[in-house]
Structure formats: structure tokens, C-alpha cells
Image (cartoon, rainbow, N blue to C red; front, side, top):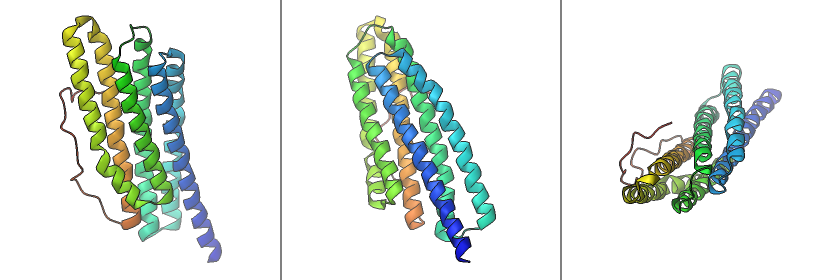
Length: 233
């Protein structure tokens, strides 16, 4: 019996390690995507796009492992929550990687366009989003439910940054029609960052679920959305 428990514990440790590995790659992809925007580096942007494939493969491997553990070990209660949450978090991290890849795609045409001051605002928003991602991954690793709830409550700050950038970009495009192309790319980047913020709150919800067995609910503070909610990639 002790051997079975030990083997199951090892399975859970491996699942945790896979989540941490995926999270680390997500942080790397987002950080480098932002750097490619800031430094106008199309080579770095293409590296991010290529690296996203590794994240897709990691998600599939984690899901297969979790399903196998559930089938073989038949976990109950807290252990089952860990495995269910792991699959949901892996899927969320894969989406974050896709959004980082989309940001890198936008960085390529921006690298050959005339530099604009708006890029600084975008990068500032990106750094805050990256910090939120890092914090929620730490909350998951340490099972820090208080930190998870704090992140969940603070996501409206990223929403407000998005709204401010939206208004700023629209103003620039109205004043100078030559900036419409660049402005559109920056809007897509800002929207992708706002969506990454939403995904980090979902990870926070999973941390809360793992620890308490309860859902956080639907009353998360949110910023008022500004136009162009159709922006997708």
C-alpha cells in the first residue's frame, strides 16, 4: 500500500513539474514577444513564434499524463481537484502562449514601420501583464490562495491600461491617418495582453479551487470595455 501511495505522490509531483515548466516557457515567450516589440527585432519575434510549438506539445503531454493518472489511481477529493485543475491550467497556459505568439507576429510589421511613442505604453502594459502571470504561477506552485485571490481582484488594472491605450491609439489615428496601420497593430497587441490578463485570473481561480474546493464566482472587478471587442487573432 505504501508503494502505491508513494507512486501516486510521484505522479502528482510530475504533474506539478510539468505545469511549472509550461509556466516558465509562457513567461519566456511573453517576455521575448514584448522585447521584440520594444527593440523592433523581427528575428526575435520569429523565434517566439517558432517556440510556441513546444508549448503545444507540452500541453498535450500533460493532459495525457493527467488522464492516465486519473484512470489508474482513481483519486478522490483534493487529489482529483489537483489533476482536473492541472488540465485546465495547461490549456490556459497554451492559450497564453498563443497570445504571446500573436504579439510577436504583430511585432514583425511594426519593426519596419516608423517608431511611435505609443509603443512605450504597450510595453508598460505588457510588463504588468507579465508580472501578473509570474505571480499567479508562484501562487499555484506554493498553493497560496491569498495571493491567487489578490491577483483575481486586481486584474481590472490591466483592463484599465488597455482602455487607456485604446483611447490613446484612437486619438493618434484621428490626428494622423498615416498612423492607422501602426495603430491597428498596437491595438491588437494591447487586446492580446488584456486577454492574457483574463487567462491569469483563470489560473488564480484554479488555485482557489485546488485549495478550497470552491469556485471564486463571477463577480471579479473589471474595467469598462472600450470598443473593438471584436479584435481577435
